[in-house]
Amino acid sequence: MKLSKVISENIFIRIFKLIITISSAFFLYNYFLENSDIIFIKLNLNFNFFFFVCLFTISNISYSFAWATNINSTFNLNKYESFTVSMKSYIGKYAGIKIGSYVIKFSQNIKTFNKKDFIKLSLFEQFITVLIGLTFGVFYFYAEAKSNLAPLVLILATNFILFFIYIKVIKNLDKLLSNITSSIPIYFVSSSYLFFVITKYAQSLNFENFIYFGAIYFFVSAISVIVSIVPAGLGVKEAMLIFLLDGLIEESLLLNVLIELRIIFVLADIFSWMLGNVLSLVSKKGN
Image 1 (cartoon, rainbow, N blue to C red):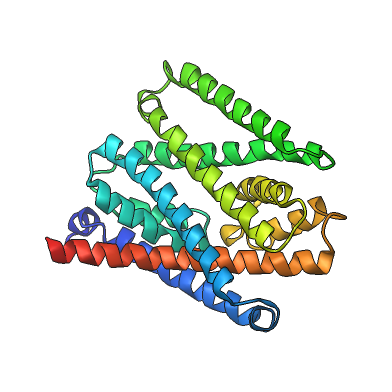
Image 2 (image 1 turned 90 degrees about the vertical axis):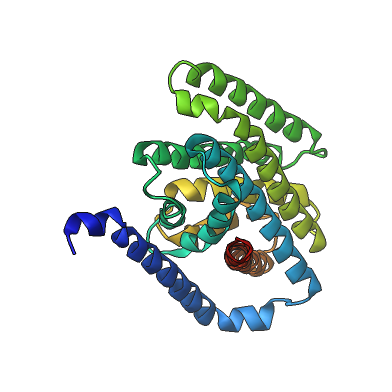
């Protein structure tokens, strides 16, 4: 077989995608194995635990919808297929490289994708989600406040101002990024939902300031995306949270909660991957 034909069929990308998926599964297997004592002794694997796994899976569904909206408007692809591929890409977060998820997304239609435009969309998604997450850091300065209304209003106002600035700046600089500005509210709603679920999780554990916990967790998640070089920021996020929440929550309790929350997120990503594969198979059988 000629090299040109091999390249045209994108066999290397397909193999790379398979490697990403296998390495992700292997990493998760080792992660659960190494923490098995903690997971099965200290964690409460009850209805509440799996209920939040489902709620976080819905968060992944929301973000996948936003991605499908952008990729479809840019490359005129099948939106349902783009959605299912995005759901399957959550397993890529745990691969040995940071771009594991986007390798899986890129495999959807390699021949159609313009690499430069795809990279723009990928960076856009990361930039928007990180920026929204960073605005929740406002809560750190309101740790002693009796009301959470002021920081919440400030976060909403900050995101509105940033959205307005983005539209003004990008409008004349980049046509592609200008065309997908309509998806920013979807990312904001998705992020707000994720923040809400984290706060409800903290509230279910009877944390006194559960909204503050949710905001700081969301803020640190955004930072870990920037500074972490390990898969899905494992360990980095937890270390930062222990530092920022020092004195507010007993350290032994906090560590156990963070481990439990991490496992919930991991299971939500696995369920998202499984759901994406099921929906993909259903679609193929329907055609």
